[in-house]
Structures are given as structure tokens and as C-alpha cells.
Image 1 (cartoon, helix red, strand yellow):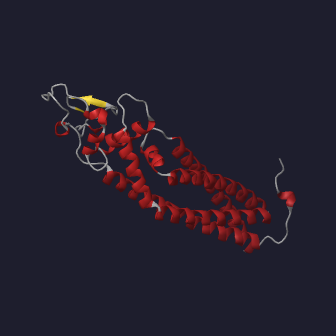
Image 2 (cartoon, helix red, strand yellow):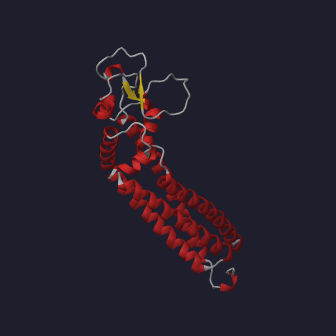
Length: 266
């Protein structure tokens, strides 16, 4: 009965580690995506705070360690090697501590991230250049088009852009343009003109055909919603890690002798 129970524990731990290997690859890929993305809101968020970039490197590090841990756990479980199971337990404990530390750090820096992001967005709006190929500008255009909003606090933030306000006809940010619910098209960039404008002397923002609501509340709501999802996933992963630690200890306790001939040689 005892040997059968240990056998079940061993192969259950193997499947568990295979899942961890795949999970590690996903986490690593997510971190690489944050660093590589240059055409969405993630880039704006990354530019607004060094904490986001640091978080991406944490994801890459945790993902790589998780993959290594899964590999060691699989070999240790199948071949019943106590030293590998011990390393597996140590890696799990380190990852668990890193997760808790990263979660606490991100939670207490959330308000700082929001403030820094607002400053960066206002800077992007002020220095926005029509026709300029810039990843940060494209990222903010994407946010405005997808969230159906304009500016940070309101569309009046765009009146701080001198190039835009120097136009003598009605000219507005293209990504802010109001579209119908069924209007599906490619995102527009730069500044657009109202061809049938009756204005003769200045660019009146009251005549812009744009969304008047700012993006601040929508962006912060998006952050809050996704933070809840991330925290939920982290809690779930932490529970699984604790289960893995218990299983590895149980299996390690029942391995009485070390046989290194079972370790595969390459």
C-alpha cells in the first residue's frame, strides 16, 4: 500500500512539474512581450514607470527559474533523486518569496505608477508631431482609439499642443474621432481636418468631432481590473507551489538511499 502510494505521488509530481515547465515558458514569454511591445498601451505604461520594466525582468527571471525547476522536478520525481528533489523544493521556496515580494512592491507603488503615467501622457500630448513615426505616439493613439476617449483628463489636454492649435482650420487628433458603434476600420494617426469647416481664423476645440471624455479613468480602471486578474493568478500559482513543496517533501522522505546511476547521462 505504501509503495503504491509513493508511486502515485511520484507520477503525480511528474505531471505537476510538466505543468510548471509550460507555465514557466508562458511567464517568460509574457515578460519578453512587455519589453518588446512598441505599438500598444503596454509601451506607454512601460515608459511611464521604471517599475513596469523591472516587473518585466522579474517575469523573465521567474519564468526561466520555473522552467529549470520543472525540469529538475521531473527528473527528480521519476528517477527518485533526493538532491534534485531538494533543489526543486529550494527553487519553489525562492519563487514563492519572490512572488510575494514583487506583489507587495507593485501594490504599494501603484499610486506612483498612476502619477508617473499621467505626466508621461501629458508630455506625449504636448510634444505630439503630425506625421512623425514614434512608438510612444502610436501607443497613445491606440489607447484613444480603442478606449474611445481623448486626452488624459479631457480632450482639452490637446489644446496644449502648439502645432495643433496653430492651425487656422478645424484640426483635431485623428485617433480621438467619434465613430459609430459598427464603424470598424484601421486606427488613424496624426491630425485630421474638417473639410467643410466654417471657421476662418482659429482652431476651436469646441468644434472638434472627438470624444470629450478623458482616458484617465478608463486607463486606471483597466489597470485595476487587470491587477485583480494578475493577483488572482498569483494566488492560484502560490497554492500550486505549496502543493508541490509538500509532494516533494513527502517523496524525498520516502527515498532512503541515493542512487545516482538513475540520473540520465547526456
